[in-house]
Length: 210
Image 1 (cartoon, rainbow, N blue to C red):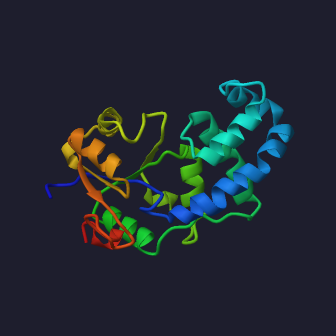
Image 2 (spheres, rainbow, N blue to C red):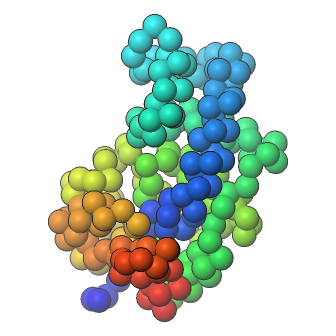
C-alpha cells in the first residue's frame, strides 16, 4: 500500500454495526416522524417540500421501510435522531476497535474522514454520542449523499478534490463491495472490511495500517 495521507471510512458495517442503524435508528425515526413534523412545522417544511405525493410524511415512512438513500429522508432522520440523542434515548454504536484505530491514525498525523449515506448531521451524532464517548474531536470531516452516490466513482473524485489530495493518497474502508469498486475506479486505495470473517481484505479496523 502506497503512502496514505487521509483515511475515509464508511459507517454501517465498518465503524458501527449494521444492526444498530437497522434495528435502532431507523425504527426510532419511524416511530417519531409524524410527531416531530407536527411539532416542528417551520423546520420541516423545506424538507417535506422535496418529497413527492399528497402525504410527504407517509412517503418518508415508506422510504424508511425501503431503506431508500434519499437526501430529504436522511436530513429529517438526522433531526429526529438529534432529539433522541439529546434526550438520552440513543447512543451511537461503535466497534471497540473503531476509536482505537482512529486514535492510532490521527496520532500518526493521518486525518480521518467519514463518508456515509446518512446525513452529515446524523454522522456527527453517532460519533459525538458514541458508546465510546465523543469521538468527533478526532475526525477531520464528513461527506454524505450531497457529494454523490457512494457507488459512483465521481463521488470519490469529488471527495479527493475537496480534501486537496490525489485520489491515490486516500484510503477508503467499507463493507460494501460496490463502494470499494467505485473508490478504486476513481483511483483511491480501498479495503473491503468483513467483520463476519467470511471474506474481504480485513476483518477489523485493527488490521488497517496497524
